[in-house]
Amino acid sequence: MSDFTLPASNPMDRIRRLSLIMQGVVIGGALFAELALAWVWLSPGIIESLVLPRLGLSPADITLDGTTRAYGFVISSLPLGVVFYALYHAFFLFAGYRRGEIFTLRAVERLRHIALAVVGAVFMSPFVQGALSAALSFGAAPGNRSITMSFSLQDYLVATLGGLLLAIAYVMAEAVRIAKESREII
Image 1 (tube, rainbow, N blue to C red):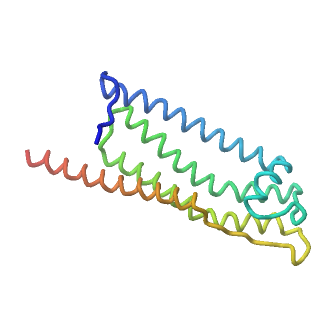
Image 2 (cartoon, rainbow, N blue to C red):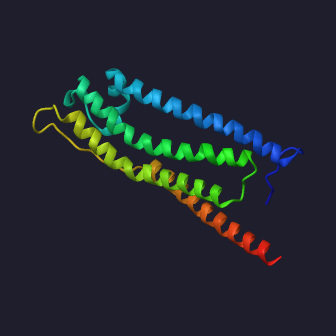
């Protein structure tokens, strides 16, 4: 088994640099996600090429008027809100790392919130798909309306990653507790 090591320099300096970079990535990712969501729902052609195949709908069975696209945007914003919640905690987790708050209960709580948001977003996914398919096909003729829901291997893998983060948060919480007890004994 090999150790993960970085080039020799002050470890806290490396953590601070990496944390600053990750805070930028979090901000950039949040901005990109919101702009991309708006772009998709403002463009009927993109909805037809990206959203409909994922929902298993055909262009003939949907309505893409302004109201329907607005509903689609609102429905799609729900899981994005959960992602923003995770990114919010990630931003402040890295801010804490920059201040040297590595093994603290605050860092553990931030990691736990991120993990729960990841798992929550995955379990929201089928319901969001169902709501989107219902909203998009609502204007279709009776018999052509549909509600589609699915849970993919990708969803399972992301949920597993969220579970892994949650387990790490619990292990870190126990490590913080043990370290605190050790300091109190000495």
